[in-house]
Image (cartoon, rainbow, N blue to C red; front, side, top):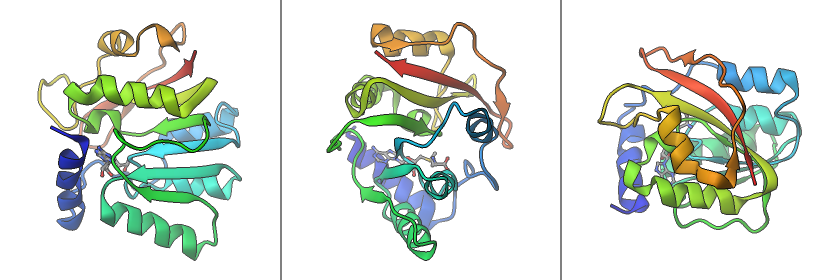
Length: 195
Ligand SMILES: C[S@@+](CC[C@H](N)C(=O)[O-])C[C@H]1O[C@@H](n2cnc3c(N)ncnc32)[C@H](O)[C@@H]1O
């Protein structure tokens, strides 16, 4: 299954307003990272940002924001939002598994993008994340925990993720507590450094 084929399904979900993953406000892990300074103004990319509010918050805080999403509806919403607030930013409609960056990023913020992709393409997606980030760049990632074999969202157990990401990424010594999602799932926030 190509990323493109899979992403078409996401467009159908936006069109039908079947978007249970969407949060009414900024993600609590995002606000914690911002408040602590872990996430500080830089050149940042948001893969599969959908219609989320975090890209606008980052742009308003002076980040150099790039969004890549394959769903036309999500891209149009983000473009209109950035335009209405006169915010700079690159918002591109593309398949993440094929998209290439014109220059490396300092950070990537992945909010329910990895878990939206089918596990067979995860190695390709992780390779893309590695290509997009500069050495020492950081991946702000929310590991979806569902405890179920099916998806989306697909379960991202930390041990399996350590194996998936491999030696090219540095993990923190300890993981912080999971953040509940209103639909009963939870996400473990983690910041990985691209080696
Ligand atoms: C679960 S939604 C998350 C949206 C957003 N991050 C949020 O938290 O509201 C997954 C997003 O990834 C996008 N997506 C899925 N597969 C993709 C692919 N192969 N290429 C680009 N975008 C993709 C979908 O269009 C959708 O916007």
